[in-house]
Image 1 (tube, rainbow, N blue to C red):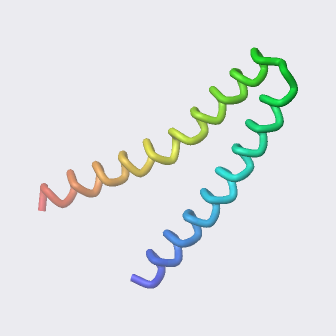
Image 2 (cartoon, rainbow, N blue to C red):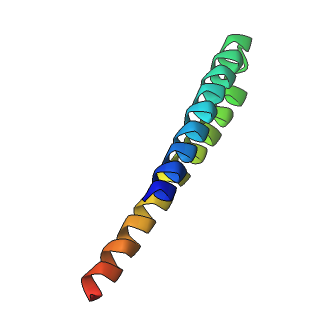
Length: 70
């Protein structure tokens, strides 16, 4: 139980740091006036943010399916 809590805390800390960096990159690119580059970086940020949610969804689905068999 303690290991799971520690793992969850670890992932929470990593996520908050990456979101802060993405916001800074977005603000810096939008200030330059190069709209195409800013949109490309913003799309990349969205893709990077989606992956953890998809992984968590797959893990929850896997746990649900294995629990349902028992």
